Image 1: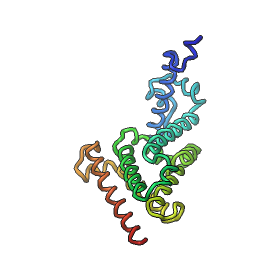
Image 2: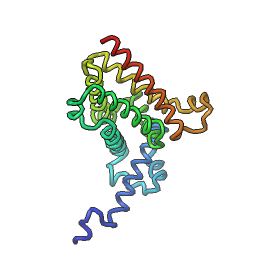
Image 3: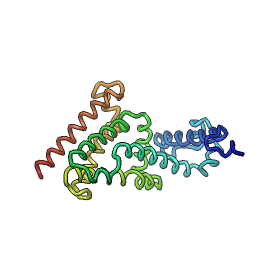
Image 4: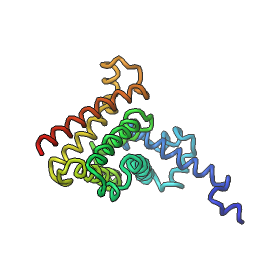
Length: 226
């Protein structure tokens, strides 16, 4: 009795592993082929799972798309939490401390979005959802996009004095995020133009230097305007 109820029991591992494999397979295939272009049979084959396990774990293909969206939310929330920290603590800090945190957040963003292999499948899935929004995008927007953008805007206000919800602050934060995202969605073009065979740690460090230079220039411009 005790053994079977233990959450760490080996008896539960195959089930949990199957569920995780199905989510990863769905994330990959929905991103590459689209939701309608991907069959449950293809997902099961990619996950090396029985096709019936999709209905067992998720109720069907739509439930699997929801699970993939939730996985994205959990993953990015973890990365954002590590990059942005406690916003209440930030609010009591100095502008210099907030600026340092912005640079650290930018570096963390590049490390995940540009250099992490996992980010490629997440971004592909997101691009599909942004092009053809579904309930999955609502979950991702509410769980990641809006709160993370809002937190960055709050950090921007602390760093510059510019109101967090002003149009200028919100647009600036979008430009900071957008420049990083381009290095993922334009990855192939970037590698060709730069003569890189891959974007690993060394290349990501160069991207960090370039994007940090842009942030430094924006901060300097805001200071002159103030």
